[in-house]
Image (cartoon, rainbow, N blue to C red; front, side, top):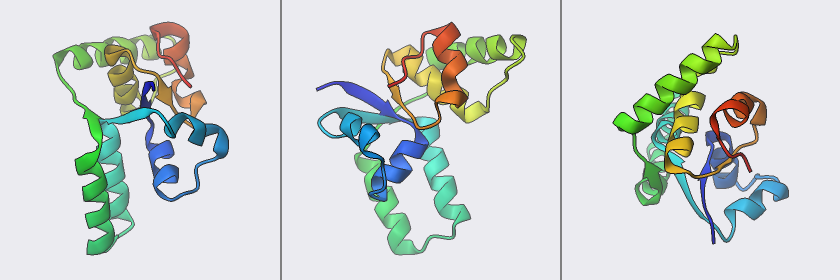
Amino acid sequence: MVRIVLDTDVVSLHRAGRLPARFSRHVVGNEFCIAFATAGELWKGAVAARWGGARRGGLDLWLDQAAILPSGLRVARTWGAIAAGARLRGRPRPQNDTWIAACCIESGLPLVTLNRRDVADFAAYDGLVIL
């Protein structure tokens, strides 16, 4: 069993039972966690979609049971370094993608994402491992 980090897109599709098989194999049988930014993105999506109480409760229960990688000074320093590097290369990335990458890099855990393009620079230049 390997510990992996699930990107927001993977969590959303996994929870909905619509995750493609080639990604499901990473989730099933491995220990997964999410970055703190993913928890925020999931909750933002629930609010924006005007989920009712029962559905929000289900998300809260799922998040309460999920292993969540926290922020902290080391993650913040990594975020600053990779965000600045991306900007200097002329490829600034969205903040939450950068936070998720920083959590993965700092924890030494690989990221499972359907949006490789969003984080490919971090893999090429900063050591992010993408599954």
